[in-house]
Image (cartoon, rainbow, N blue to C red; front, side, top):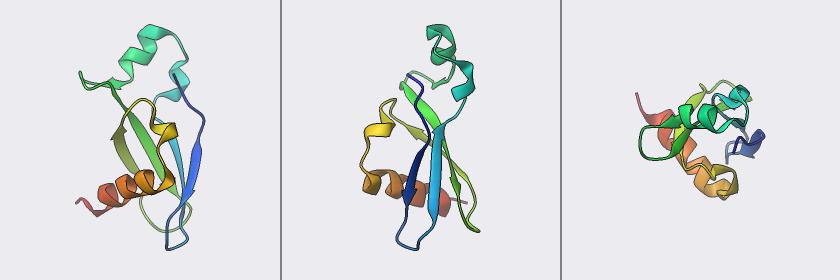
Length: 83
């Protein structure tokens, strides 16, 4: 299932807008399968910051929109620390 954008704010006040990559493919099962990452069933989620930080791409479970803000922010933090 393709989800709507989600916004979270980190402790420094940066707002991150996250959306599943390839969301524009639609809800056709074949297209949704094409958006998955390998055999894991994870999907790519792109998070874009409101400030000077760089965007990041995350591999998250398909139901990522139900993650707590803290878990999503931790994933963003890990991704933005990687070179």
